[in-house]
Length: 238
Picture 1 (cartoon, rainbow, N blue to C red):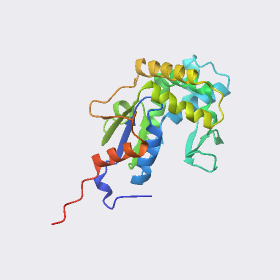
Picture 2: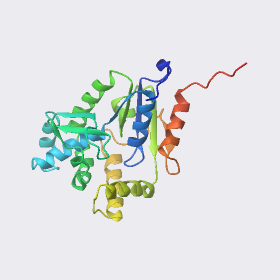
Picture 3: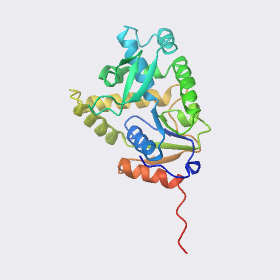
Picture 4: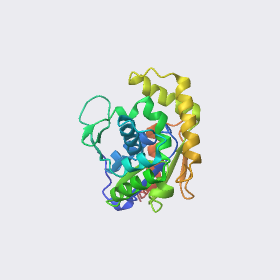
């Protein structure tokens, strides 16, 4: 793990927003590793609620029931304990559901469930509490605008629908999914519409965010750009 001797140079809270498959998870994880920070992908929380709601037989359109679940569910994220490609363990009520939250049926309903004001309010409280400890890279769709409006650095990662669909399709195939590319495109398009049009905390670019288009950039190149924003250049040798 790389760290800087003068960690005070770095903003204690870094917010990274953007649409699905724009590179937030990979970039956030690499940036956090470099800085020695915690990386929290807040989308995990909404996926966990969605999976649990479906597992309990709740109707995703039942906002009241899903909101009540969000206020009582126990979600924890820990370092990965299994060598199956995971970056971390996702525990729902103390049970490992790391890959369950990535199932196609979760993809189909997570944007709707995450659009409920009560669900987002419950998760926002948890996210702010975690961020209050500092030294964190938090990823999501409303981090810089709603959850952490005072974050020291705000980044908005963007990419075209075609590029994002290719990335997500590759991920699904690597996990053995039978989903088609057309289904991935349709799923992402639907998520984009819901995320951007919801009344409470929609996906949008914070006024003071730095926008980076990742279409032609690797995760490492994006991380380099972000680090260049927060690490002062070395003083020239006289």
